[in-house]
Image (cartoon, rainbow, N blue to C red; front, side, top):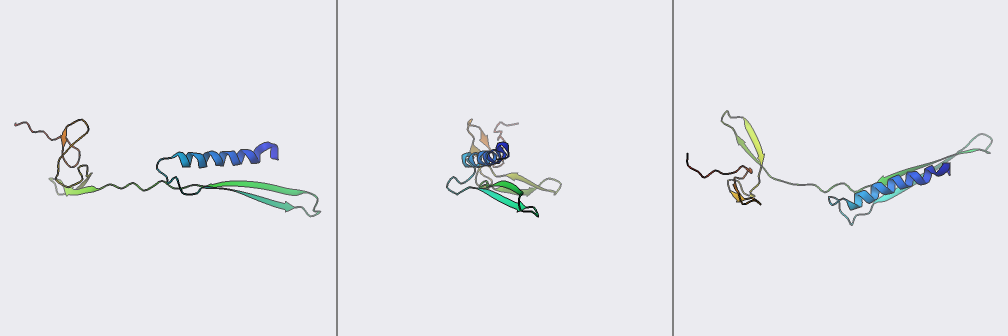
Amino acid sequence: MAQGAFMEQFNIELKKVLANIADPNTDPKKARKITLTATLKADENRDVVDFEVQSKASLIPAKPIATKIIIDRDKDGSVVAAELKSGVKGQTFLDDDGQVKDDTGKVVNFSKK
């Protein structure tokens, strides 16, 4: 019907659903839906009918991503914030390259000046 436009609409929504399922940031076990709504409306003589189909996908939103932020004040007293990278405020850690970094991810320089 409609020179294949109805099926084309369904296929567009199906691609959205499949992409949503493949997204690692969504819950794979939650159901997705494709809804096709058919609307039929006759004219006064009831011999011609307007027929519309609308498709709509119900997708699963991405899972929330959480992190921790350290709040402090700079030398001027203004509030500053940085992501807590070490897991504990004030703690240093080794990154993947073996560099020692502070809790905000800045490289710690142990050389004396």
